[in-house]
Structure formats: C-alpha cells, structure tokens
Length: 296
Length: 310
Picture (cartoon, rainbow over the protein chains, first blue to last red):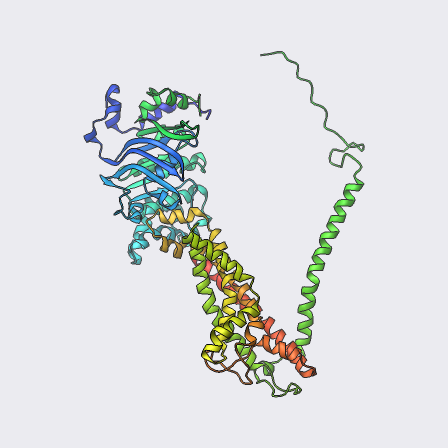
C-alpha cells in the first residue's frame, strides 16, 4: 500500500459520521458509553484455524447495531477470516475451526443448538466477486424468499421490487427482470447481489471487499447505498481501500499479520476504535504506519 | 536533479531491407519448420477423420440398400437366407432395453456423483467408491454380461430384456458417476456460497443452483454412456435370449437387440443376412444420433429456462 490519506479525505470521512459521534468530546471518543450502542456481535478471544494453521488470533471486539464497522489491514491479516466467522461460512470449509466465543444478540453463534442456515438468513453476505446465479434477475432476488417459503407471486413481486429499489437497481432493470442476471455489468451485478441479500430481510449485512472489482463510479454508488441501508441494518465491511473505510465506516478495526513464536504469520487485531480516531490519532504505531502508507 | 548523461537508446533493429516489420534474419529454416508443422497437423487431422468418415459413409451406403419403413417394422425372417423380413423386434428391443438401462443407471449415477463431490469429501468411504467406480469403468462388457447371467438370469430362470438392461446399467453406472462428479466439480464455489449465505440448506443449494449449472455436462456425459450401451453386444448375448417377434415387455419373455442382430447376421454366409446386418448397423447409428440430438435440444431449452435467457 502506498496510498496516503490526505487531510481532505479525513475531513470527508468525519463529515459523514453520525452526529452522536461527532458531538462526542474528542477525548471521550474512544469510550462511547456502552448503553448507547446496542451490541450485535461480541467477539472474545476469537481464533480461527485452517487445519493446524492458525490464521487469526486474539480478536476481541463489539460490533454495534446500525453502525458500519470496517475491517482494514494488509493481505493475510485475517480480516476476511474474521468476517466469515460472523455468519458461520467457515462451516463449509473442511478443516476450518473457530475458537473463542462469538455472540450474536447475546446468543452463542457456535452453540450446537444454533441452525447455521437460520444464522445465514439473518446475517447476509456480499462477496468480493459478484456472484449472481445463472438465473433471471427476478429469480436471483426471489431465490432467498422462496427458500424461506414465500410462494405467492404477488408477494414475491413486491419483495423483488422493494429489494431492487433498496439496492438502487430497480430503475435500471425493471424492464428486463426476466433476462439473465449474467448480462449485467460488474457494478450492477454487485448491486444485484446486495439486493438478493436484502430480499431475505437480514439484520446484518457482511460485505467482504464488495467494491474491489468495481470502478470508482460503481464504488461510489455502493458506498451511498451503505449509508442509506445503515438505518435498518448493521453493516460490517472488509476493505483494502483505506479511503473507503474512512468515508463509510463509523468504527474501524485494524488487523495485521505478525510472525508467531514458530515464525508463521498469524493475523491479529491491533486496534479498534471510532474511525476518526483510527485515522487521525491512532493509538498504535503499527496502525499509524499502515494508514500513512509506511507499511503494508 | 543529477546530471547523469543517459546514453541514447540503440536504434530499432532493422532487417537488411530496411523494414522493421519483415523478419530480421534470413529465416528459411524456421519457415520450413513452421510449414512442415502445419502440414503435419493437417495430415494428422485427415488421418483421424478418414476412418470416421469412411465408417459412416460405408455403413450408410450399405445400410440404405435395405433400409425402409418396412425394414424397421417387420418381424425377423425365420431363415437367414430369406430376403424378406426386417429388424422390427430388434429396434423395439434396443429401445426398451437401453431406455430401461438409462432409467436405472443415470439417476443412480448422478446421485452417486453428487454424493462423491458434495458429501463424501476426503472420507475413506468416498475414496473407496471413487476407486471402485474407476475399476468398474475398465471391466470388459462381456464380464458384465456374465455377472448378470449368473447373479440374475440363473436365479430368476428367465432371459428377459430387463436382464439385458441390468447388464447395460452396470456398464453405464461408473461412467455416469465419474462424469457427474467431474461436472459438479466445475461449478464455481462462489455460487454455492452465494446460495448458502442466503440461508439455503445444502440439499436445496445442490438442487436449485449446483445441479442446473452442471446439467449440460452431466447430460453430455450420460449420453456418451447411453450411446455406448446401445451398441453393446456382449452384455446382451446371454441375458436377453432371442425372439422372432417384437416384445415391448421388458420384464417378460425373451428379447433381441440391433447389436445382437448385427452380430448374428454379419457372421452369416448368406447375402440377405449380411445386408440386414448393415441395415441394422445403419439403424443403430441413426437411433444414437437422434437420441443425442434430442437430449442436446432438451438441455439447451432447459438451461435457457433456468438461466432466464430468452
């Protein structure tokens, strides 16, 4: 990473933070009273292994409702591994294990009584590469609701229109709902994937580098969209783009990868704070080194 | 600013003729090698195409001498010397026996492929099934015939079309399992994740996302297995018996098939029988061709419907 954060971008980032946080006196920013933030996810001492290899360790953080939380850090630092542990996507990877505790609204996410399918219905995910199904636009959006038992055509029509509208795609596709989703451009396909995730009315949206394959215009549209969605959703985003983290997020977690005792690189959480603090007066020299472009 | 003098870049190399677009050196040898390679490729293609074209041409030419609607529908003559009669019962037999085998082997094989790719993973049982189906692929077809003869025909004490179907199904099964597994492997992982991330269960993801994506490949692979089975003679020799009249009943009574008729008639010293063998061979090629074309059309239509292209 050689990008440096210019003062302008920082100011932009600040300007988009919600008033409650901007109003805080600077010294107290890192200590927003807990009662104001409804905790959705609480991670304590989370470690993820792939087989015998430890991918990430020592993750302790709370993710609050109706906030956008960004995970940043260099490649291999474990940010994608952590976000995928939040909706149990690791269940699908043979050999992957999640240690420590992750609670979701106070319930242990990895308890044996939890149904992973229900977890993933409530906690939606948008992937790095847009992955529309090889079906029509309509059937892509209706896929989730159909799984969950919605059969009536009129109801499905409403859900499809509503989801596409929320994802700011309705205007562009309303006349070609029956045509293949594979004909959409990259940015449209990614908004389709967001709409598809929204169609099951999730509580949380996890976004794993959702804009890394998109041009700046498509990226800007998705960032605007995230701001609109925040009122009803909790969003966690992994991004390689620090300006993006500064622009969209309320809180930022910085991860890095460091060699362990045996010399293997293991990801770890370095610092988690209000985005403005992370970008203006980071508490850890490693964070500062990363955001000023001296490292990573 | 440093004052290092950068030496000027050497001029673009030019050929003696002064052009930069023509070859710089005299390249007669290279041109010769390139030309030789092209000629060899064309020759290799022609060599590969000759037997194929010759086979289709010869069988068609000979087959058309006797081929007619009557030939397809009339019963077998009682004497090989007879110029009358057709191959009706054999057409019926090939169709019912192959369809029976397909109905048994394809669903089972596709389910087996799904098990291997989606559920077995690296388990020991999965590895065992994979290994056995590989071995089964190499078992000679006459062994399959013998196997069904001893394990089925000798037990039920009756040769039927169904016994032939069983033998052909044994032959097709490993091929269908392996192609299904290979085709399912090609389905992008992101599609599975996309479906599961919406709260879909694994079985549903397989049914609604994975299988439709793999369907064209599975159909092609199964078709190869069906086409091969339709032309097999050895597994039918001991299992279906013989009949002179058409038998649409797969489960009762002996039957016959085009491949068996070709085998019997081509061995005959009588010209009319040899002509019937060519007619039957041509009919078999025609049936396989029509079945393949139909299945391809069905797959294209189905894929279009699933992927929403119009």
